[in-house]
Image 1 (cartoon, rainbow, N blue to C red):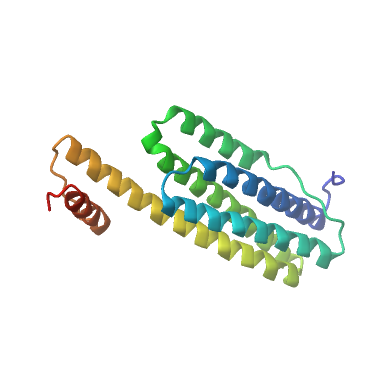
Image 2: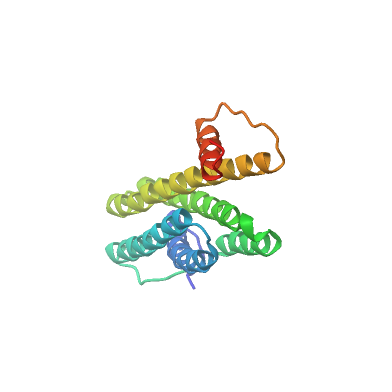
Length: 194
């Protein structure tokens, strides 16, 4: 446990310990949700995010070393709350919605991680911790890429689900979104109706 937070440097150190704990917890939760994932594209995205989490934890550990601080990790109740919410949704949702629930959890997690790194970098630059900030920026960039990957995949899966449901109830679906139109066409071809 870190001492009382009385200086900007102590706050940075605490938040760095939080980031390290966050990445360790994220890795555990990603592995958990990976086991429940149905589709291969989601599994691939989660496996990439799991590798990212390991690298980000390593970056945080290097920052502790560069700063000459003992390695410390703080628990991350916010990330655990996001995971708890995802677990509840996963239990309540029909199994055909599992990947959508997991993707929503992954987006919420990535948004939180981006915010943590942005705050660390802002404070670190203000404190003159340039080397630390460069390492943390690598993690930030990677989190933004992960967010883009899961958001794009979520849009595609939602579009396919929207098309499938509309076709199931025989509702004509027209959209200006090319992803929805491509999904509809692929659905029709798969059913032999194209």
